[in-house]
Image 1 (cartoon, rainbow, N blue to C red):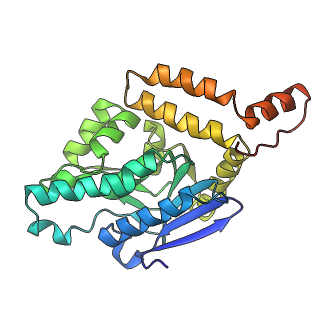
Image 2 (image 1 turned 90 degrees about the vertical axis):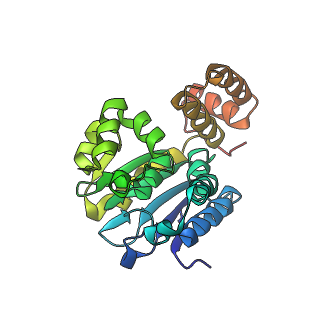
Length: 259
């Protein structure tokens, strides 16, 4: 079905692997379109509870965008390229109602770093390399990098990394708050799936509302607190809330159904 990505659904976790190892899994129009299609399919699949995004091979998560076509673009073409990527993939991931976790197994540069940052959180290997080196091309990040990197690691360090084009490894990324966990390369996916399984055991509608509310906070939306109140109230109308509170009071494990 797909030419540039691999998909595997197991135990509620849909693993999407960007599969262009010969190109360091670089993003191009075909990858963007296939990722968009896979996300749309996952959104409507009740068997998919969490999405795990990673890259093929041991070298790269996504080493960046395929820039071979950049010299032919003018201002309007560049703007359209960024808008299309944001609409089809990056903003779609950020606002996805199901958790999307990036497991960064190698280079995550430029568009690759932006792809990881669009996910709800990240795990990585120690040797992973994160960076926004667009300044070396006379460009700036166009897939949300200026916004999300600043949100995740703060203004000063984000300024430095984007203005110098420097890379940081997985350990520094964890120290800065860019990634949540650093795992051994041979257990990256397994350990990340353990976190995913813990999330799957929780109430899915509540998880979706958490994603929406945290995104409000990240963007300092003035309606964020009002939205939290509204979504909190909505939670009381769900079967999962009745089950969760009953299970707590009855000292048993809750069985959530996503309703």
